[in-house]
Image (cartoon, helix red, strand yellow):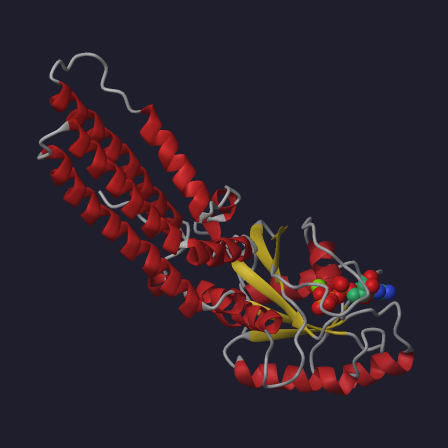
Length: 351
Ligand SMILES: Nc1nc2c(ncn2[C@@H]2O[C@H](COP(=O)(O)OP(=O)(O)OP(=O)(O)O)[C@@H](O)[C@H]2O)c(=O)[nH]1
Ligand SMILES: [Mg+2]
């Protein structure tokens, strides 16, 4: 039975395994070949040699074919991928190059299979033990050159496999809030206020380069928080920003747009509100909760100016400790029905 490919985000642990070069693959294959022994049960020298070499060819060829297959399987099937992962993958690697590399691995595996049968026949019909040895050697040479030609392809895949380890594990069934906003406004700080996620915070812009994931419970419901890299308000996105947008576009049950009303983040209020306006246009169907963060740092004037620009807002800062945002999210999540009784755990939203 054909083994199903695993989803993109389940590759983390496997990709920690060492990704071999073509030279290392050959060394492993020769290790398999050397172990082959047919014992003493065959008396006829020619028959024994043919049997031994056939077994060696099988061990050597099978190993190479299996190894290439396994390496190819470490990567997701791009055409059947979830749209979020596809967009994220596009920001991490060159998809065409990845497809080409996987295609080469696949084609080489087929070539190996073909020549394995070809040389298997030759060994089987050898007239002398020497001829059987010669055919085995030729097979080793041909298979070796197939693997050697893959060297740069394997290097590319090794590099890509490292990048794919950055892909987060995401539960597509959970209520998911995506933190978005300019760099340095406090998105990761909010993630940490709400969840126990381990993530890096610093006073530099673009601290978050990948998507951080955390979870917390709100009225008996598990909420997934995705903290994204900072976005700038411009049409040409870099790869870091593309990841943020992929999360917002495909995963957000609600977008939490974080605004730093002070100049502490390095951006003006105007720049941030312009981005918010663009996001509102771009993601019309998704609720955006505007959070005015760093309330502890902001002056009266800065706060008032931000509040004027937002019809509804949530005030956050060190003192608020995520509580105002929690309240806003409870409202947004709507009523929760307990499946066993059909009763509401949280009261239905009044419309
Ligand atoms: N005083 C104060 N500082 C804050 C608050 N929230 C965040 N900061 C500080 O602001 C800086 C940036 O915080 P981060 O959480 O890394 O910001 P970010 O939006 O995740 O930044 P990027 O990952 O670069 O996009 C850090 O120095 C934080 O300590 C807050 O509510 N009050
Ligand atoms: Mg961050």
